[in-house]
Image (tube, rainbow, N blue to C red; front, side, top):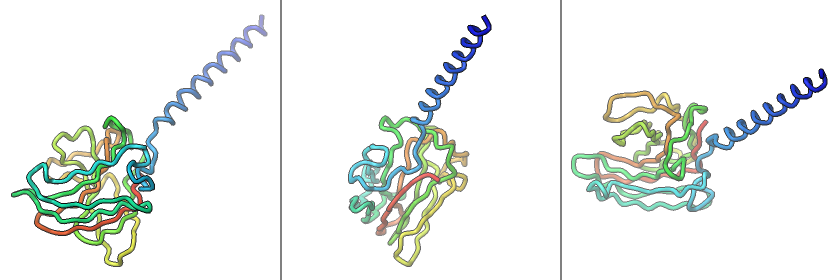
Length: 199
Protein backbone atom coordinates (compact mmCIF):
# COMPACT_ATOMS: atom_id res chain seq x y z
CA UNK A 1 0.00 0.00 0.00
CA UNK A 2 2.81 2.37 0.84
CA UNK A 3 4.45 1.55 -2.47
CA UNK A 4 1.27 2.32 -4.39
CA UNK A 5 0.85 5.60 -2.55
CA UNK A 6 4.44 6.63 -3.17
CA UNK A 7 4.15 5.68 -6.83
CA UNK A 8 1.04 7.79 -7.21
CA UNK A 9 2.84 10.68 -5.46
CA UNK A 10 5.77 10.30 -7.87
CA UNK A 11 3.36 10.11 -10.80
CA UNK A 12 1.59 13.27 -9.62
CA UNK A 13 4.94 15.09 -9.33
CA UNK A 14 5.91 13.97 -12.83
CA UNK A 15 2.59 15.20 -14.26
CA UNK A 16 2.91 18.57 -12.52
CA UNK A 17 6.50 18.91 -13.75
CA UNK A 18 5.46 18.04 -17.30
CA UNK A 19 2.60 20.54 -17.24
CA UNK A 20 4.91 23.20 -15.80
CA UNK A 21 7.43 22.58 -18.60
CA UNK A 22 4.63 22.79 -21.18
CA UNK A 23 3.42 26.14 -19.85
CA UNK A 24 6.99 27.42 -19.59
CA UNK A 25 7.72 26.44 -23.19
CA UNK A 26 4.50 28.11 -24.34
CA UNK A 27 5.42 31.28 -22.48
CA UNK A 28 8.91 31.28 -23.96
CA UNK A 29 7.50 30.70 -27.46
CA UNK A 30 5.39 33.83 -27.03
CA UNK A 31 8.23 35.95 -25.64
CA UNK A 32 9.22 38.97 -27.70
CA UNK A 33 12.72 38.59 -29.12
CA UNK A 34 15.03 41.54 -28.49
CA UNK A 35 16.07 42.04 -32.15
CA UNK A 36 13.19 43.55 -34.09
CA UNK A 37 14.98 44.19 -37.40
CA UNK A 38 18.56 43.69 -38.57
CA UNK A 39 17.47 44.48 -42.17
CA UNK A 40 18.98 41.28 -43.57
CA UNK A 41 15.71 40.53 -45.36
CA UNK A 42 14.70 43.08 -48.02
CA UNK A 43 10.98 42.85 -47.23
CA UNK A 44 10.33 41.66 -43.66
CA UNK A 45 11.64 42.35 -40.17
CA UNK A 46 13.12 39.67 -37.90
CA UNK A 47 9.63 38.68 -36.77
CA UNK A 48 8.75 37.81 -40.38
CA UNK A 49 6.39 40.78 -40.74
CA UNK A 50 6.45 43.14 -43.72
CA UNK A 51 7.69 46.66 -43.04
CA UNK A 52 5.16 49.47 -43.53
CA UNK A 53 6.14 52.84 -45.04
CA UNK A 54 3.83 55.83 -44.60
CA UNK A 55 4.21 59.60 -44.95
CA UNK A 56 2.29 62.84 -44.58
CA UNK A 57 0.74 62.80 -48.08
CA UNK A 58 -2.45 61.32 -46.58
CA UNK A 59 -2.66 64.44 -44.37
CA UNK A 60 -2.05 66.91 -47.19
CA UNK A 61 1.75 67.00 -47.12
CA UNK A 62 3.98 66.53 -50.13
CA UNK A 63 6.92 64.75 -48.55
CA UNK A 64 9.00 62.69 -50.97
CA UNK A 65 10.83 59.58 -49.80
CA UNK A 66 13.25 57.06 -51.24
CA UNK A 67 13.73 53.96 -49.09
CA UNK A 68 15.58 50.74 -49.66
CA UNK A 69 16.96 47.81 -47.72
CA UNK A 70 20.29 46.61 -49.05
CA UNK A 71 23.28 44.77 -47.52
CA UNK A 72 21.62 44.66 -44.10
CA UNK A 73 20.93 48.41 -43.91
CA UNK A 74 17.75 50.46 -44.23
CA UNK A 75 18.48 53.69 -46.12
CA UNK A 76 15.93 56.50 -46.28
CA UNK A 77 16.28 59.94 -47.75
CA UNK A 78 14.07 62.59 -49.24
CA UNK A 79 12.47 65.94 -48.72
CA UNK A 80 9.99 66.90 -46.02
CA UNK A 81 7.24 69.15 -47.39
CA UNK A 82 4.81 69.55 -44.48
CA UNK A 83 1.07 70.01 -44.74
CA UNK A 84 -0.07 73.52 -43.86
CA UNK A 85 0.12 74.16 -40.10
CA UNK A 86 1.50 70.71 -39.26
CA UNK A 87 4.88 68.98 -39.12
CA UNK A 88 5.87 66.87 -42.11
CA UNK A 89 7.01 63.29 -41.69
CA UNK A 90 7.95 59.99 -43.27
CA UNK A 91 7.79 56.81 -41.19
CA UNK A 92 9.01 53.23 -41.31
CA UNK A 93 6.72 51.12 -39.10
CA UNK A 94 7.96 47.80 -37.70
CA UNK A 95 5.00 45.77 -36.48
CA UNK A 96 5.55 43.42 -33.54
CA UNK A 97 2.58 41.19 -34.43
CA UNK A 98 1.19 40.31 -37.89
CA UNK A 99 -2.36 41.29 -36.81
CA UNK A 100 -1.18 44.47 -35.07
CA UNK A 101 -1.97 43.04 -31.64
CA UNK A 102 -0.04 44.31 -28.59
CA UNK A 103 3.09 42.51 -27.46
CA UNK A 104 4.74 42.65 -24.05
CA UNK A 105 8.16 44.36 -24.04
CA UNK A 106 8.21 44.98 -20.28
CA UNK A 107 11.22 42.67 -19.90
CA UNK A 108 13.31 45.34 -21.64
CA UNK A 109 14.56 48.80 -20.59
CA UNK A 110 14.44 50.59 -23.92
CA UNK A 111 15.22 50.68 -27.63
CA UNK A 112 18.68 50.23 -29.14
CA UNK A 113 19.65 51.49 -32.61
CA UNK A 114 22.72 51.18 -34.80
CA UNK A 115 22.17 54.32 -36.84
CA UNK A 116 23.77 57.00 -38.97
CA UNK A 117 21.85 60.28 -39.35
CA UNK A 118 23.38 62.18 -42.25
CA UNK A 119 20.85 65.00 -42.53
CA UNK A 120 17.61 66.16 -40.98
CA UNK A 121 15.69 64.97 -37.93
CA UNK A 122 15.01 61.38 -36.90
CA UNK A 123 12.97 60.05 -34.00
CA UNK A 124 12.03 56.58 -32.79
CA UNK A 125 8.64 55.86 -31.25
CA UNK A 126 7.24 53.00 -29.19
CA UNK A 127 3.63 52.64 -30.30
CA UNK A 128 1.20 51.43 -27.65
CA UNK A 129 -2.34 50.20 -28.24
CA UNK A 130 -3.37 52.47 -25.35
CA UNK A 131 -2.58 55.60 -27.40
CA UNK A 132 -5.46 56.42 -29.74
CA UNK A 133 -4.46 59.84 -31.16
CA UNK A 134 -1.14 58.79 -32.77
CA UNK A 135 0.87 60.89 -30.27
CA UNK A 136 3.07 57.94 -29.34
CA UNK A 137 5.97 58.00 -26.89
CA UNK A 138 9.03 59.06 -28.88
CA UNK A 139 12.57 60.39 -28.58
CA UNK A 140 14.75 62.19 -31.08
CA UNK A 141 17.93 60.46 -32.26
CA UNK A 142 20.89 62.83 -32.06
CA UNK A 143 23.02 63.32 -35.15
CA UNK A 144 26.79 62.79 -35.04
CA UNK A 145 28.95 64.68 -37.51
CA UNK A 146 31.55 61.97 -38.16
CA UNK A 147 29.59 59.99 -40.77
CA UNK A 148 29.83 56.74 -38.77
CA UNK A 149 27.19 54.35 -37.45
CA UNK A 150 26.57 54.82 -33.73
CA UNK A 151 24.86 52.73 -31.08
CA UNK A 152 22.05 54.74 -29.53
CA UNK A 153 20.15 53.51 -26.47
CA UNK A 154 16.87 55.21 -25.61
CA UNK A 155 15.31 54.22 -22.27
CA UNK A 156 11.54 53.82 -22.36
CA UNK A 157 11.42 56.18 -19.36
CA UNK A 158 12.82 59.04 -21.49
CA UNK A 159 10.29 58.71 -24.30
CA UNK A 160 7.63 61.44 -24.30
CA UNK A 161 4.46 62.38 -26.13
CA UNK A 162 4.62 65.57 -28.24
CA UNK A 163 1.27 67.33 -27.76
CA UNK A 164 -0.81 65.21 -25.40
CA UNK A 165 -0.82 64.86 -21.64
CA UNK A 166 2.34 63.09 -20.50
CA UNK A 167 1.41 59.55 -19.49
CA UNK A 168 3.70 56.65 -18.62
CA UNK A 169 4.46 54.29 -21.51
CA UNK A 170 2.89 50.89 -20.89
CA UNK A 171 5.52 48.62 -22.44
CA UNK A 172 3.26 45.58 -22.13
CA UNK A 173 0.98 46.99 -24.87
CA UNK A 174 3.40 47.75 -27.74
CA UNK A 175 2.12 47.12 -31.25
CA UNK A 176 5.06 48.52 -33.25
CA UNK A 177 8.17 50.67 -33.36
CA UNK A 178 8.52 53.54 -35.83
CA UNK A 179 11.49 55.35 -37.34
CA UNK A 180 10.27 58.83 -38.24
CA UNK A 181 12.00 61.52 -40.28
CA UNK A 182 10.30 64.83 -39.47
CA UNK A 183 10.49 68.60 -39.75
CA UNK A 184 8.24 71.56 -39.04
CA UNK A 185 9.37 73.21 -42.26
CA UNK A 186 10.62 72.28 -45.72
CA UNK A 187 13.86 70.32 -45.34
CA UNK A 188 15.92 67.33 -46.47
CA UNK A 189 16.57 64.15 -44.51
CA UNK A 190 18.95 61.21 -44.92
CA UNK A 191 19.48 58.36 -42.47
CA UNK A 192 20.57 54.71 -42.35
CA UNK A 193 19.75 52.05 -39.78
CA UNK A 194 21.74 48.85 -39.39
CA UNK A 195 19.68 47.37 -36.53
CA UNK A 196 16.84 48.15 -34.16
CA UNK A 197 16.26 46.10 -31.03
CA UNK A 198 15.18 46.18 -27.42
CA UNK A 199 17.75 46.09 -24.67
